[in-house]
Image (cartoon, rainbow, N blue to C red):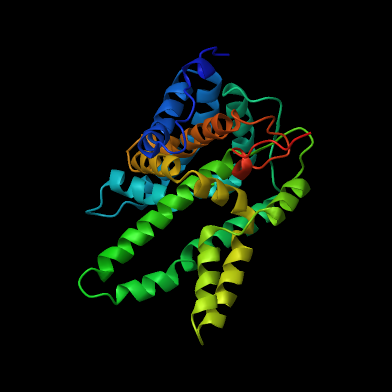
Length: 300
């Protein structure tokens, strides 16, 4: 086991040093890629899903390449289409990788957070619907703005996608700490405040006549869909500059040929490190979700 993992790692900058925190977040996936390359066990566990996906994409690309369409281009088309699939089908493998990353980054004993297949598929469907509809009202309104409307809509969609890349990274890095169960995590989600976009829609509903009821009902629906990710959403809301840097770096990784095959393992290891670094200033992390890592411990 490498001994230099926590030696190289620096603590996050102060919360008011936003520029430094952007750079800190930007560096995390790069740092994680270096750590994976230098750790034989992490490299082996990271290569398995990447190579499996590459073999499937290559096979489909070779068998379905049409005249005028290069095999390499077809490979990446298939890769983009199939990239979310291993997250569900290889969930158990990624859960064990999260445990390994947690322990390599200096975390204590933990267990893999493995969900039943039905629950995982339900969450994937809920997230797909939430991502598709949550910013739809804003996009519809902004699209009518003369000259810049279409450009702004594309920017909003891109930022929304980056936001969820970070959310998924932190979700994938979650583990079961001693004494935790899926039921206890569900209970914690119930106690966590609604995410920022739900609160914004509720506030709009309270101030807008006639259509306010529709906005409030839409906010309730989005809140139900977002419940499984309340902890991760709260964490990003509490650390926006760090999350922004993390998102930019992972976006570059996602669009870099070859390296993007290792996208999920790299961001999972990076997210594990971020969660632990944020946990260090407070007392034991036991019983806390990632969204509350930076809160002071309760007095005994």
